[in-house]
Image (cartoon, rainbow, N blue to C red; front, side, top):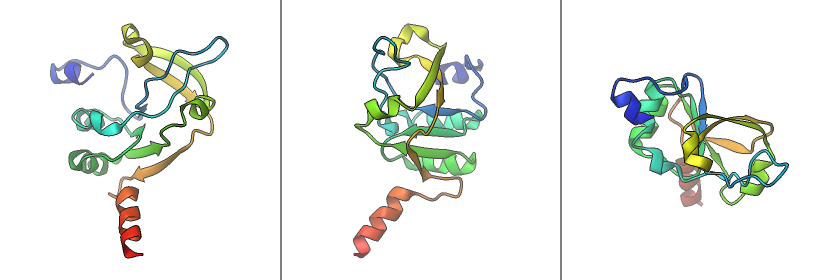
Length: 144
């Protein structure tokens, strides 16, 4: 996606108002919508995130910290970073009610999908005001 954008081309789907879930699900078993769908470590996407936020992406779901440049972009573009619990892929998959491949089908489980979720378990870690739940928790822990 970022390669398309840096070459002046449009992404294969509209990023405006969307949330990206950093996940590489396992193939679904028969009768299931998706396989295990736990979050992937988000910082690996940090080099690409500011460009996607500039194009209208409004949120990301993953696990772990984000870099300074991403945190600044989240605040600048009024986006949100949610954390989901790592190791809970089987549980999370039960909250995914529908999936549809929208881009890069050739990537298999790494293809981009539109997902319909219900009661997806995630918390806001970084918000549009620059708040950082990870930093707040570290400061609180160190005070005690």
